[in-house]
Amino acid sequence: MMAGHRLKRWLYIVHRWLGIGSCILFAMWFLSGLVMIYVPFPALTKTERIAGLPDIDWSLVRLLPGPTLRAAGETIPPRVLLLEMRGPLPVWRVRTDGSEYTISALDGTIQMPPIQTQVKAIAEGFGHSPALRLDRIVRDQWTVASGYDAHRPLWKVTLAGGDGRAVYVSGRTGAVVLYTERSERFWNWLGSVPHWLYFTVVRQDNALWRQVVMWVSGPCIVVGVTGFWIGILRTRLGARRYRNGKMSPYRGWMVWHHWAGLIGGVFLITWIFSGWLSVDPFRLFASGGISAQAQARYEQAAWPASPDLARLAPQARGARQVELAWVGGRPYLELRWPGRTRVLDARTLAPFRPAIAPATLMPSTAIDGIDRLTAPDAYWYDPTALPTLPVLRIRFADAARTWVHIDPATGRVLGDIDARGRTYRWLFDLLHKWDLNVLTQHRPGWDILLWLLSALGLVTSVSGIWLGWKRLRRPGPGQPARRTVRPIRDMQKMGQK
Image (cartoon, rainbow, N blue to C red; front, side, top):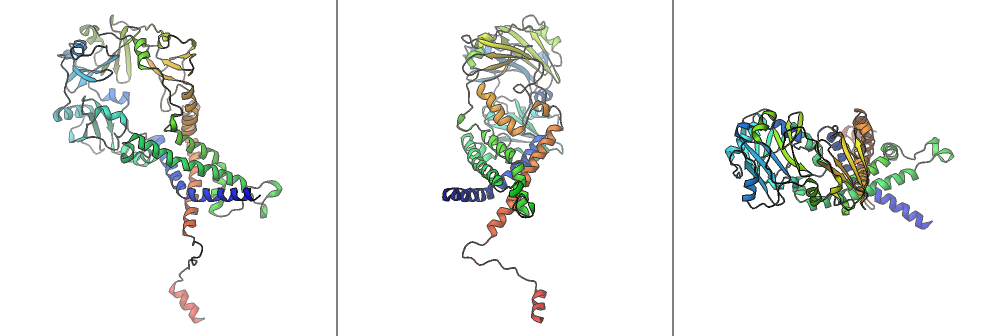
């Protein structure tokens, strides 16, 4: 009995004192999470990038980059080459295992990092507005992620107009890497930045940021579990009800805290737990995936000797970007316009019909099955739009139970996921975002569910903040109780009596 009483006492103490700070975090996370439903963190999507690029000037496209790359000492053919405009010049963008090149499609020269006048022209062409200001930066709040490291230092170009548009240009390649507007940045200060604890001073050190997320959200899990436990202990049903037939012993703000926490407790616990998993603590769900060597074996890239650029130009008129890649040793071209694409055989310029041989990805592993998906499912989905469809799912019988998704139009590997990744999909993505296709594809059903669940969380956290504030203001042992100061007129009345 004494041990049980002591355990219950510590249960209340831990919940009370950890909860005072945690409820502030809970309220911030719920409010910022609602903002994130509608305004994601700034990122340049492929669609946005294609829309901002100018049409390729085919009169200046004369050379392929192979000879230049071999002269630079590259001995392994690149897996992907991109043709697009850099200012007034068409260039090939090539990434090898160790380097990234920007090569002129006019004369084959390797382009140097852009100078200020070139950056200005690139940004103005992308944003279709005059540049007001150019700043050379290493990072800022919107480019703090490590994905921008290959492009640092960056050029930030502020464009004319009342919407505060900014274009970020790579200081190494001259490619536009980000485009933001003032309203987007404003809402992210209320959304993604506080929600992810994404402040520059912390996020610029990825290891430090991961530790901060883990150790800030970890105690919040304890608060949620202990609060739900207490809520169950303090609820009485049937003949055991409290005086006046009440199921809760509390009143005032405590009643709101009790019932909101009890009804929404499971959601709150799973939500903060899944948030803790967002940084994959202790790398529990890390997996190797399909290796670069396996991808190279599958693609069998060669030095580009095709296409015939003169014959390609009429078919690619108005295209903003052309990708040259390989599948099974066969080169193909993906021509991209705003809103549409076209895939051609790079040797014949006829529609491409890939010969897909997924077994080359894992030659020593049997294939369990091949599925053709024509609709999204729990593992092939996009919460904001439809994913690439149709898609082939190759299920391998390796120890990790790897699934590979392949685009049947090109043969390109679109992604892979193993058993750990599929578990993570449920423990993080579902429990944190509730991004089931049945909800995200039938909005506002998804919005209504998230608002209702967040409302329960907000009632729990806001009531907890108020109760914590009252607890902190309560005098401690041995301290005199706070006295209420009466108005002067009341004092005078007492004197008259």
